Length: 357
Image 1 (cartoon, rainbow, N blue to C red):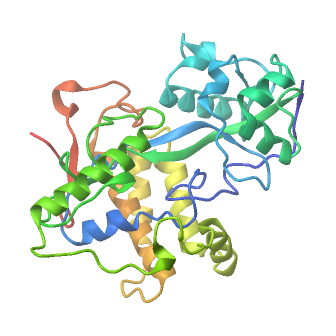
Image 2 (image 1 turned 180 degrees about the vertical axis):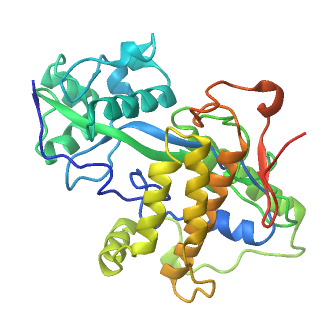
């Protein structure tokens, strides 16, 4: 077993939504949530950001997620000194829930002053890993890492948000004729955390339900399908460019602005996996002091404005929830408080964060 040494430090590199290290595209700036928020819609549970515990931490590699199934198959987490450490944080060790494992990894990184920990799969034969985890094995191999013989450097990355635009179970928001579905919406089905693959529920189930609600709420009398050209008939769809190619080109053509990088750094350092009131309030002061243009003319300026607005909403919501629940953990309020906070948070533009009655 040998550690790979060409790794990244979380304070220096990364990409994604509002956080320095994230599993999402650079363009995921929460524009849908921000548009709804600007329109007066209520946002809910914005303090709940899930961090995947094991994202690949190799220099030059994306924050590729190493599935929890690896730990389910016997993967072991080791610190920078190759010591197994999960037992000191939770009796379930590597099989603990995502939020517990992510907090344990960050705590161990702080304790050992290291930029990452290691995921050790070397007890499994190469043939098993290639067959059971073909994409993960091949991706790691493309970055010079053989899971059968090397321990993989990993650290947590922002992955999924439980909060968003508050909807009912049919995608209706607090603004008439405005609907939301997918990761933009906060349906409430996740609670304070999330199970793997619930994005299918958000996208497929609630996407379909929202479409059905729209048709029922605003039927168009006498409508008939538009004539469709042969180029768009089923089976004859015109070739479409790969969205990833466009994203790659956009990220190369428009390097990240210093303000955008600053927002993500603030969120990672102060509104990340381990939180406390003092740091949250410091983050809000820093975010509010940033000079973000109100008159956005370009796509990049609009994305920056949206990123900044939602970063403030997340921070304000985290300040308001004075307890620890699910993915939201505060060192100054380390326990759940069901009497005051077993309820969804709500925030509307120009209003204070409140909680459902």
